[in-house]
Image (cartoon, rainbow, N blue to C red; front, side, top):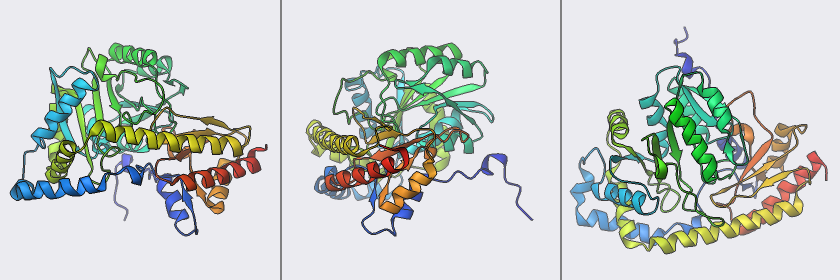
Amino acid sequence: MTYPYPEKTRLELKSLIRAVTEKGSSIPGFISFALGSPAPECVPVDLMRQAYLDVFDQDPMAVLAYGPQIGDVRLRDWIVDYMATRQNCPADGQDVVMLTGSGQGLRLAPHTLCDDGDEVYLDLFTYPNATYAAHYLGAKPVAIDGDDDGMLPDKLEEAARSKRGKLIYLIPNFQNPTGRTMPLKRREEIYEVAKKYHLAIYEDDPYGEIRFSGEHIPSFKSFDSEDLVIYSGSFSKILSAGLRVGYLFGPEDMIKKITAVKNTDGQAPLYNQKIIYRALELIDLEAHIQQLRETYGKKCRLMERALKDSCSSRCRILVPDGGMFMWVEIPDAVDIDAMSDAMIEAGVGPVKSAAFTSDLSRPGHAFRLNYSAPSEEDIVKGAALFGQITRQFCGD
């Protein structure tokens, strides 16, 4: 007898990103462009070790016993100050909830804000865990078409006329997977649609500090006059991915309700939050972020040159102003599945666009390539292999 699982769990959404890594693990010399991991050389290992020891030595029972559900108070205060000074966001009427990795917020937001069947609006290609979270919590992910500036406001409004929408999920800076950055005018247009239809905006900004070209663009949260925006931040990309420390910053009432839902998960690891706060005390954050920008910018330019030198002229290469990812579009007539398999067999592992679609009927014809994690040598070698395969499948 088969257990009567609810409808929302019957669709098994498998990670094509992990699949690339698993397939490549048995291939000698395999170069993975799959995972969105920080550059190993930019992780401040010695400083993080010192922070770890300092926290334990200062007050062992503060981290070995239960602590406040809201998280480390000093780190929460630091975040409020960061949002005010670096993101130009008013602190009045806003609050913070700490997360076990910013990904926890992807589940908490639809869980708190959506009833079964409510619609969550996402880019057609986006971070897959956002789509999965909406689906598994009973909401309906709805893909919204976009252009090089991001989600199209008229397409968003067309979907919102259903009156079933509750939430818009966006990565406006160096979007995962496409690397695109949404201009201020487009952000303002999206916000107007959100106001008109009473939609919350989940502004996911894990890569925002890693801008190595172009000008800073104000966040949605910085002009959130109607208290519609929840800003999601993370320390994973600038200090430590493994400690899993993220946060949501948003309207007090909304954060209060999200916190109530989060409390059913129990307390997030307080030790990790204290380590992050101690690291922030020890580090010259501006200098560290500048190092990140220089390293990622150099790696991005290496990949750009190698791809442009080797790829078929029928490919379109989208070069980002920051973040970790480059997006390469291929002609619609090409068999992308066969092309992906050929790349893995050749020893290079990009991720095909089907891994990121929020509409399973539209898998797309593109690849995401990560340049932050591989070495410079592997970037050049892997991009050349990638380009060679594109010429085989797409022509010169």
